[in-house]
Length: 150
Image (cartoon, rainbow, N blue to C red; front, side, top):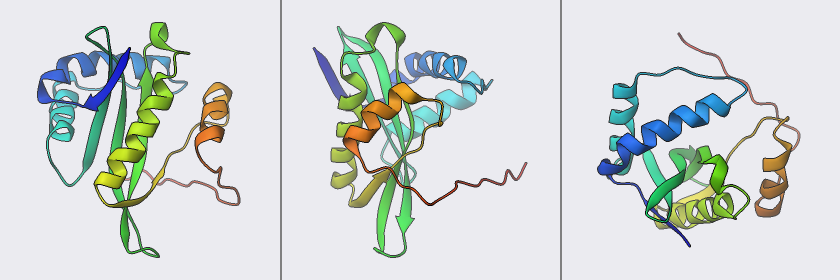
């Protein structure tokens, strides 16, 4: 059985290890400061204006997470939520945990007065797209641009 709950500051060391696995699995690996990441995860686990962090717990072990950040929709004049990072450990995949994390994100967003939840995935991430296509409408007609400032 899997339980989805909000992360606590005590979860940070475990979540840092999961973030290492997450970035290690990525087609664009990323190295980070463990201390800085732990501090960020602690901040997200506490009440704040940045966002929130949900964890999936199976057999008393954290096996996945959903990292969420607030945004704003000018048309709706309401907050939005971006599901920025979603990860489930390899041994816990194909059990519906990612779906549970996303659905819990929807519930969490509603509880925090958000009008929508959005997320992106790489065009090559076909297995995730199978799930995402069941849970949300795929937007078309837009390109995502990003200008790095540093």
